[in-house]
Image (cartoon, rainbow, N blue to C red; front, side, top):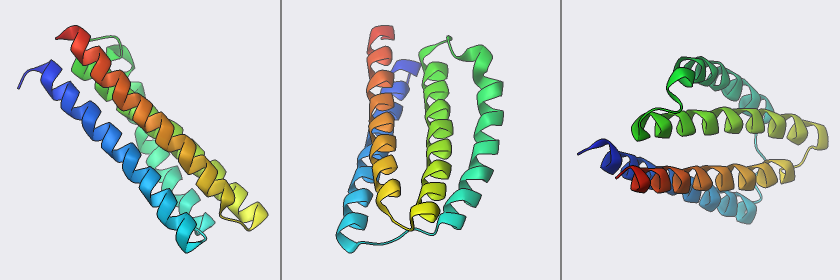
Length: 127
């Protein structure tokens, strides 16, 4: 499988992840489940540290070949998601409501799906 084909696959997987997040938001809305804000924040902080390290390492390759660009987009989206989940956790704790988590989850879903579309578009241009 060449870099363009593997990047298209990565873009499809990214979009699948975004749709999965969207489906989970629907599930949590129906079940009216309230997330654990301290767990959200602590796990996202650990993930944020790891993703920022990866983003720094990838920075010099972000304009490289399509597979490196896809990796950059994945990691950038992960950093955005981590920061968003931390924000959601703080807002969930402050308002004692799941609504901030659901709203921010929708935003994260849109970002992830958009990233998948972007990866596929760039892979097709490179192909």
